[in-house]
Length: 199
Image (tube, rainbow, N blue to C red; front, side, top):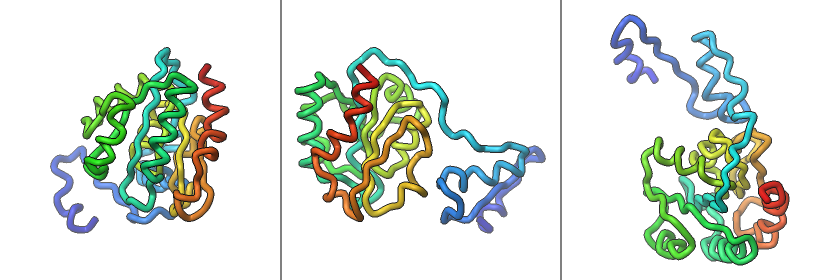
């Protein structure tokens, strides 16, 4: 922060705020929001109280994250999408970015509409159309939670108490230190309450 701080303020109304890079508060959103207290803001509720009520059968999936170790195996994503399509007539918004391989995008393409490297504003609009979000420990998962989209997040090596959105409309599924330990039936069972609410 020292190098960056030397470039501010650019004008009298600016203040430079900083915090340690590694979270010392849980959830991580509380840690990164803590510097706002210097401005008289008290960031405590990071997520909306009301869920959106989309009428579509659209489910957003983000099969990636910043690290392959935080990703559910692609064959399981394919099985889950096929099951949701067959049993719940689901349609999919497939969110990918630079971290997801072309092979992942090609494999998931038959299931729905691609949302590859969308600008943030467009991604928010697209998420607002969705009835559910499925993902991992990623920034996109936090964005979906902030948009009020009910979600199921699959966690493995990272601690959901620290890194998952702390929001009532987000469920976390973790079976151990690797995502391979989460079976298709685990995901189906965890989704059942969310799907029942959405009927």
